[in-house]
Image (cartoon, rainbow, N blue to C red; front, side):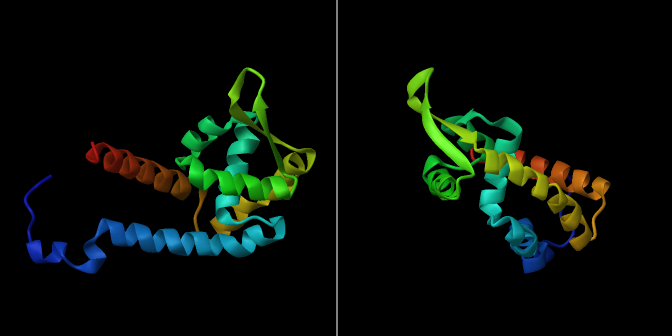
Length: 151
């Protein structure tokens, strides 16, 4: 990284990485709302279901780690999905202290409807698959660097 050419530019709102990420995050999540509505899912619930469609059955601790959510945030999401009969929570037979999260038949079936979500979102956001991969790569790089910087 070379020397900063104009230090005053660095203090402009639009120059802040955090501002761009925060605005993009709010706007993208907002754009998901009407696409997820027919599935009856909020964006956080959709992320949980994506993880479960890929990894269920999975321990609650592992799911929490996978989603980068603390258990206190994940638990109400799981309770809501359980009340909708999309998932079940039960004691892990291999470890009585651990909870195992599984999809119900309805939860597994909902995956079929969700197949259209990524396609609709790429259309809404005017992105192609390469754009999505590029964004994921940059966001991954950003998240890793931010995590390392915290020590």
